[in-house]
Length: 531
Image 1: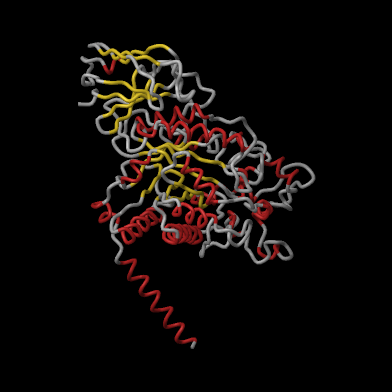
Image 2: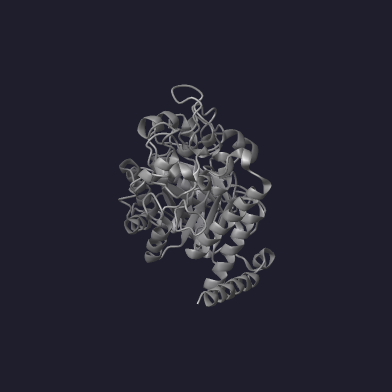
C-alpha cells in the first residue's frame, strides 16, 4: 500500500512538472497579451484591507513593525504603536505580535454583504488583502503555517471574498506585500532600551520551544519573523524567496484570481516575483482560452503590467493603463488621525485619475471585526451616489486629447503625503507621482477647473468645484488647437434642467445651475465636440 501511494505521488509530481513545462514563457505570453477590457472599462474598483493589524485602534498602518520601536524616527505615522501595545496587550517582550494575531477574530465579517454593497456603490472589481509586510497569509496556505485559517479568525479570508465576488459576477483580485518582511521585521529582534523590561529580547528571538503552553504551541516564530539577522545565510534567503514564490503561485491558482497587485518597486524578489506573474497569466490562459488577468506593480516599461501609483496621480494622460490607489488615512483601520480623505476629495481624485487613462482603486479599511466604520460608510455612500449618477462618463471612458482645462486654478504646491511608507525610501525609489495626491485639506479648485473623458462620440466635462454661474472653457472654442466640432447640446448628468451654452471661436461658455444632483463635482455631457 505504501509503495502504491509513493508511486502515485511520484506520478503526480511528474505530471505537475510536465504541466509547468508546457506553460508559456514570459516572452510568449507577451506576444499575445492585451489588457483585458473588463479592467480598462472598469475605472473604479474597491480594495478591502483586513488583517491582524486591523485589531489595534492606534499605531498606524505599520503597527506590527512599530509596536517594537520605542522611537520610530521619521516614520511618525507609527508613533502611537509602542505605547498602545504595551498598555493594551502587554510588554513586547512577553506579548508580541502573536497576541495581536490571536485576538483577531473577524467575527462580523460578511463577505456577501460587503461585496453586494461595494457593487452597489459602483465597484467593477474587488481586490482583497492576501498578505502584508507582517508575513501573515489571509488564505489557506500550504507553504506557510502562519495564516488566517490556522489561527486568529480561523477563516479563509481570501476564499470567502473570492466566493462572494464570483456570486456577484465581478472580477476578483488580491494584493501581496510580503517580499520585504525580513527587513521590515528587524525591530522585532530588539529589546527595550529603557524601563522595567530593558534588555529583555522581543518576540522575534523566541523559538518554537518558547510556545509550549501558549496558544501558538507547535508553531515556530522564525517562520513568522524570519531567522534572527545574524543567522541568515545566502542559502536561507534563497529559501525565503522560493517560499514566497510558492505561496503566491498557490494564491493565484487556488483562487483563480483575475488581478494580482504587488507592493514595492519592480518585481518582488526579482525573477521570483516575475515567475508569480507568469503563473497568473498562464493560469488565466488555461481557464479562459485567453489571458484575461491583470498584473499591477510599481514598474515602468513592462507592457504586460499596469503601472501602480500609490496615493498619487499621473501628471499627464498616459498611453497605457495605470491605477491610483487611495485610502482614507492608514491602509489598515486606525483612529490615530483625522481622515485624510472625504467624499469630495475622493470624487475629485477619481475625476482626475480617469481623465488621464487610469483606474481608481479605493481602499476600504475594514475594522478588525470585519465591518466598515460608520464615518467611512458615509463617505462611501456619497461616492457611490456620485458614481451611479455619472456612470456614463466613467465606465468604459477614454481620455480626450487633453485631460483638463483652466488648469492650476489654485496655487498648486507638490503635496507629498507619505503615510504608511518609509519616506526616505519613497524619495529615493518612487517616481514623483507617488504620494502626490491632493487631500481633504488641499486648497479648493477654482470654480472653472475641469477634467474631460469621452465615451463614443460624447465628451464629458467634470467641473471639479462647481458654483452657480457660468464658466468658459478655451479648449472648446472653435479655433482651439484641440479642434473640437460644433457643439449641439450640453446636458447635466442626473438632471433634466436645461443648460444654456454658447460656443464661439475662443471658448465654450455654459451655465452651472444652482440646483445640482450632488454637492460634489458635476458632470456635463456634450454632443458635437467629438467629430
